[in-house]
Length: 165
Length: 329
Image 1 (cartoon, rainbow over the protein chains, first blue to last red):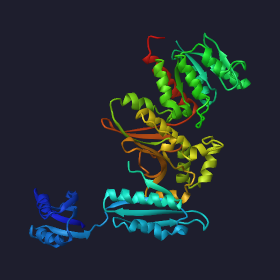
Image 2: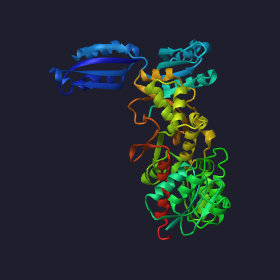
Image 3: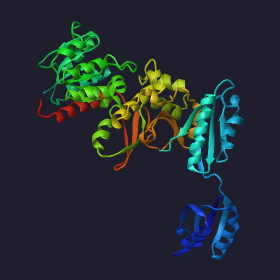
Image 4: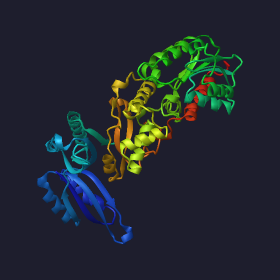
């Protein structure tokens, strides 16, 4: 599973290594490390945000190991879907089974529609909708986009994708 | 002096004459033609006089002289082919260009029809006769994108290209985003201001921009694609609500052409683009981003159409030919 943690470390050399070593020792895969020095606050601690991939049964042992190293865990949460993309769909969304359109993404298990914002000017006119889609990985997002393109072809929607370049 | 025969007296042809009347880059106009008349003078014609004649009589020359006669018999070194584009057949421009190349004359054109349909054939014909065939003005107006990619970035691998290549669509999208106009209102405004044709289909359905992608793909990457190979979606089905939804996330919608040759991607469609992205240019401007292996990312912005802007691209092609073939004239 993917877990995001906010750790508080003493701002002394070697602390980041001390915090990250147990993660890799236990077979965790470190996805991102966001490292903030907060000198303005005049404190001698720094906080680090890490996102890791680790088997669910090892999360508790990891927490204990980090605590035994003197590291404070400020926040811990499961980060299922870390990739986020927003698309716009224009067409007769409601009359072409909106539930099905959303489900085609959700039932993949690797991507889901997490937010939807609809604008329906009149019953006979086309609806414009913004979908926020989250996925496990970048490749999964590309697969989700391919599914949406297929849905757009079948249901005659105009799909507007973000420019990633 | 390099001698020019200019075929076509529309906005582009007149722009070239205006540009030539205010500077003397060492070029001599020995023949001109519009669709109904022509004028030949081996010692050179005065651009101001041609413009005056066209304005006062509607013809640039003598009704007895045709473009075809000029191409086959008049004395010239470079044919400047600036007749209106026929995207389906490429005619009469394609025949005009062949005629000049077969005589061993260079050709410069702003005409997208023959270039998108026959660029490989015409370039091969030019090579066979030891002359140049150049068409900078067919893509992105005043931005010297073809020259830059072929020569300025020579030695680079061009990994991808993204661009806003149609000023009419960009104008419409800018007005929908900034003024909250509907697609219909913005199109009407573009027509009133002369940014859109009476029949805007060619622009708003993306055909014009897709043709430019074809020209770039076939010229820069030596592909053999046609417009059927480009995945094209226009802007004519966009709604005001869609622009508002994009706006809520600090983004907007632009018609973006995309070429990623290694993945076989040739695509033109409306895209959600962050408002501070370099491709978000305003009004009728064009913009292009290229990613290269040595030079990294480069951005070009400029006017994509207009009489003098297109004349700028034509002139640079003519002068490039003159400089490459220096000594011959």
